[in-house]
Image 1 (cartoon, rainbow, N blue to C red):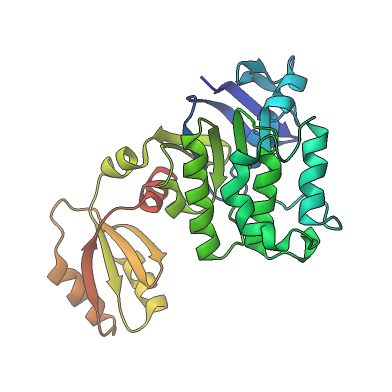
Image 2 (tube, one colour; image 1 turned 120 degrees about the vertical axis):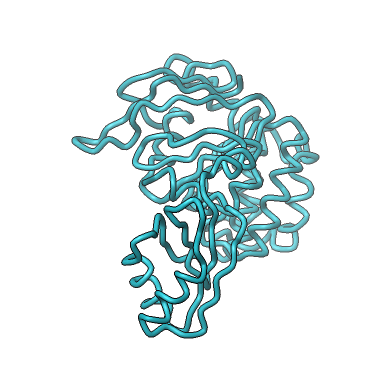
Length: 300
């Protein structure tokens, strides 16, 4: 295994940030840690990258123990924290040269690894890092994390605050890096990005809810999901939550996602109920289950 955590726990005073977490990431796998802010993702990353000591449990990265072999781990992993942490007063090229020097290498030596990413930021190589756009900052940070050819790459919420086009490009780059044999552990609060991983761990309040492939997690969802819309979405949500047969109700983009307690969903009865509450333009359609639906169910 490339990454292994066994019964890891970490507390800050009375707050349990990570509570008895165990999972493994295979060599060459793209593994996602999926959960909202405050779920414990960053704490796990800091423990695995030797920046933080766990209170309990054991962990290894690339065969090295996170406590005993912390120097070896730092030489063999790339880490991209959630917050942009490069030197903002240095240019793109100066940042890259600086990080290459730290690891005793050069940009040229591992250029093939970063080439397709660097080509996109090369026109801005003389621009200070602090003046780059969000998407360009992320690409530069990824280049700096890869410059020493790491065995394992840690990416903590790499696409937070980045525009949709840059997000798509970023994940395409990760897939190409995976093909080069690099193990990737990525965390994200975006449920749509979960489907791009080989396997995912859904995490909430420091606990793992489920670990599986995105396809299997969706497949095991126990109920049918319905998209519902009406002329007054706020009132629609309130009325659905008061409906005696409702099992789950939550906003989902321009719709409300609804699940029914009964095995046989009575669409006509629900429409009549909502019309009786004064709602109009009611539209109800069954919709495919998403990772977000599965997460909401598991988090109950």
